[in-house]
Image (cartoon, rainbow, N blue to C red; front, side, top):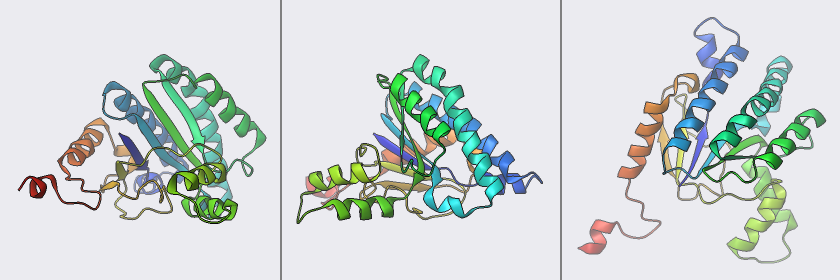
Length: 230
């Protein structure tokens, strides 16, 4: 299954503790490691996409943005060996032209050396906007096209392959919206919202979300399995 997570609440987690928002982002990076490890231990999640930095996040204070960019690079550097050890393929979706050349080089290096990972495909959305990606795909179209053909245009627009449809979308931090994340891929996603801030989101909370997903009756526009059998 493909699980996507909007990792919300880092800044508020820090502010409630009298800490700078950047401390919340650092704590959130530790949670990423825990959840990725949990995903690799099970045999349920094949693709995990994490919303690391939205295109709209450029409007945040310069100090916070700079800290996030440094944190993203440190995460990639520190986790590459761990990804290799655990068979995790790591790739990044989103724009790269607004990232520093140093960060882009780090992304490309990590993608290259983890490309053969088969236990989990971890995707980080950095400078990502679903609306911009869809608009970019539409601009590349020449006349009508099938959903499959549109996905090829979408892949070009977001500078990465389009992942499989999202099965489960989790959002932490108490908000209940998609915030321009994976709009095409989430057409039939099951949504799970939690009030827990991302730094406090742990393996039991992740497993609880997976159990909630397992209880859902996914109909994809048809009838429920119970009604079909009746």
